[in-house]
Image 1 (cartoon, rainbow over the protein chains, first blue to last red):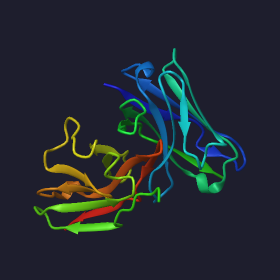
Image 2: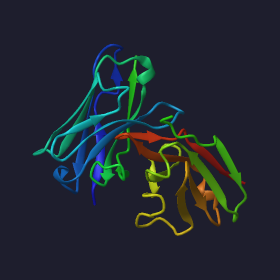
Image 3: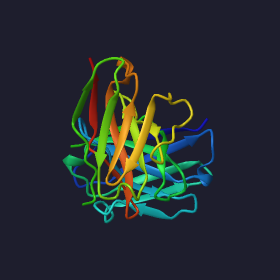
Image 4: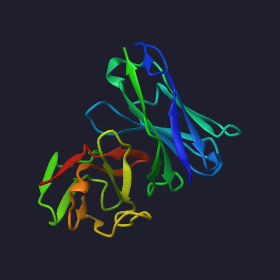
Length: 120
Length: 106
């Protein structure tokens, strides 16, 4: 069974770059699409972007200028980098697997446990 | 507008039917999905492609989508169904989530 686990620094300074890793176990990163989604404390979910098994990425327009999602196939990891962060981006960051292939029918069927990142 | 609107809260008595709505211009022509999130947990996929249930999701969870509104219906609501419910859809190759609905069973 596929499982996801986020890891990375829990504290990032304002204006610095947030970097997180999602480790995929129980399945190959090369056959699915993968997204990052965040949730500020007490608030709703916001999609950040996805990467496909072929390496193409698509980002939320509101974050596009600051975000990069990439992967390391041999290690079965994918990554999030978000530059120039502000305190309002303090959130739990989730990685999630697409149930589908990057089409507008996709939903998210497997989620990591989430990584709390504080910008301060 | 490219947003999904949900009621902030819904209350239901145990055993009754709960309905949670999600409104957005893109609905009806794009699929809706639904998730439940309990405190301290990750979201759980309940419904995808408007009305399909993933393996392990009870039959009392159902979904529909017509016009500009999607609806999640929970039949025979139980106290363990309490949590925050989010709808999700795509619009112009961007994923949108609704603001969430807190379901209280009392």
